[in-house]
Length: 106
Image (cartoon, rainbow, N blue to C red; front, top):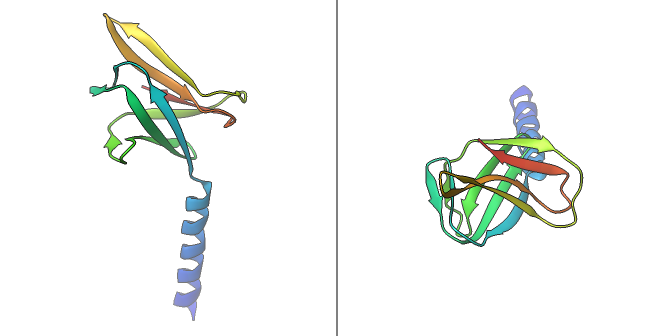
């Protein structure tokens, strides 16, 4: 009986983690780099779960990038922060619309 209780608690915990995950979509209009990866213009997805975020292509392929999730004011539109670095565009952050978070790329 004790093992069954542990299994039920584990399933409930895992279900809670899945419920807390959020997915946000954004678009790059020009090439940019994140970490050592060159991103092409197009659609991308951020999977955010608490303080962790995973950047993915539209097809679901994960892109290796260190991220930090910060709380911020709500915005009406998704904001994508790009900065120039030695003549190249670098993806610095994404603030999804109506989310209250900002994903910062390190």
